[in-house]
Length: 167
Image (tube, rainbow, N blue to C red; front, side):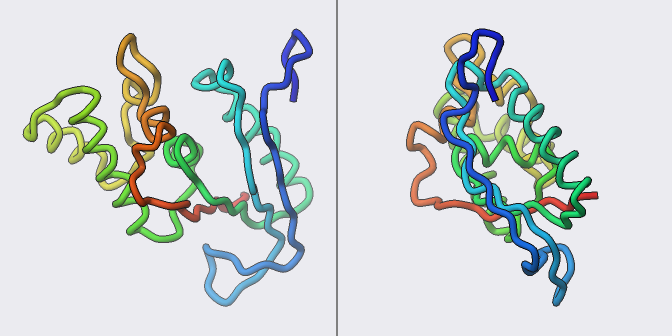
């Protein structure tokens, strides 16, 4: 994918396709799966909707070729981008860990007190996809949650498996 000035939008983009892979959405069932191994946007294209656009184009292709699911391992930016695109965490503990990191982000970047943090976390209803946009985009001197995670603030949290049903 390139922009109007013939510059690449992605630093890395790697996909693998499997004809007969276990599905996360249906126990004991297999089907065609697209595995998104890596997708890293160049910095100037982050937080501008390019990931969403790329995903929509790929999703159309996957529907055309009867894929059942998309699987990926999310890190840093992906931990907040993919849930906004309706990917689910395979393990709910992973999502809870990301929510705990969001609490740390609110403390360290936004300097919120415990009562304010509790109110914001409660509004998430246990779902990362419900994080308000103000925390997902760099806002003046306040870096985005994804940027904060990419700067090494994810602690010992490793990749989180996620999936989406292709419908």
